[in-house]
Length: 116
Image 1 (cartoon, one colour):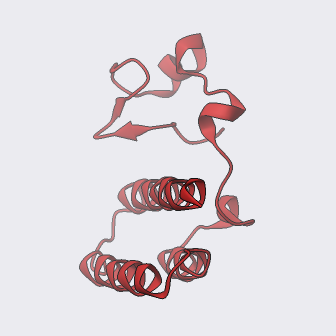
Image 2 (spheres, rainbow, N blue to C red; image 1 turned 90 degrees about the vertical axis):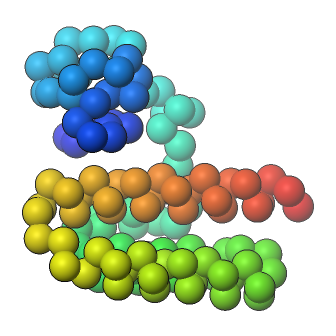
C-alpha cells in the first residue's frame, strides 16, 4: 500500500501515532490484513485519481443500494459533497478525501447489503 492507511489529520488510526512513512513501514500493528482493509464496493476503486473519477465511481456505487429512496438520498449527498469540495486544490488533501469517500462507500454498501 503506497498511501497511509486510515490516516486522519496526519495521525495513524491504527496506533494514533503521527503518520509518516518511516513509522508505517516499521510498525507491524499498522499493517492491515486483507480482511481489515476490505474489498472496494466496485472494481476499479484503486484506479481513482481525480475528483471526477471519484464522483462517477460513487454514483455507480449508488446503483447497488436496495431501494430507490436510498439511491436518491446518497446521490444527493454525493453531489453536495462534490460541490462543497470543488475549490480544493491541495493534492494531498484531495487524495485523503478520495480515500475516505471510497472507505465510506464500502461501509455503506456493506451495511445495506448485510441487511438483506
